[in-house]
Length: 171
Image: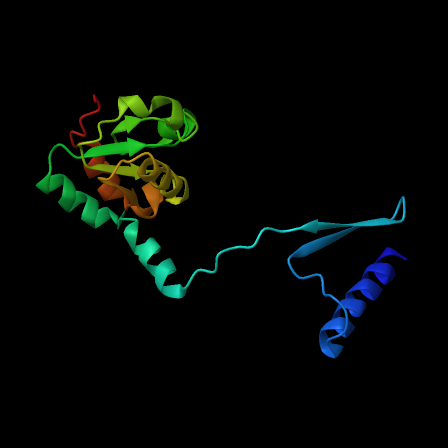
């Protein structure tokens, strides 16, 4: 019965759009409570349209490095800081070094991070570290980038090589 009621409401909206008669529920959400047989409207705030050009520029603004580029960066800048934002249990399984501040702890431990050093954030696959980079950039950290693919993006020999590098574990 409920699908029939909702389908009839949707069909009514389509008829309004096709005929141009009445007001369509544009920028609104209609909720229906079948238990009390009530409906209500929620008005949505208008979103600012974003052009494709702006979206591309914002995406390009976030720096990403792959494992090979990370090795080159470390060679060029021995003071490069590697920031592991995974949970402690993940770090115990495999770590390529650096300091450890989990994503969950990051907002409370911002004061421990030097703003002047170049930093590369990493996690298991790159998703959480991407969020960490966005958060840190919102906190006015400018020399920070994300390790694409995280620790899973490295070959075993690259992981072993990185583990033997000096990542300045102390801040």
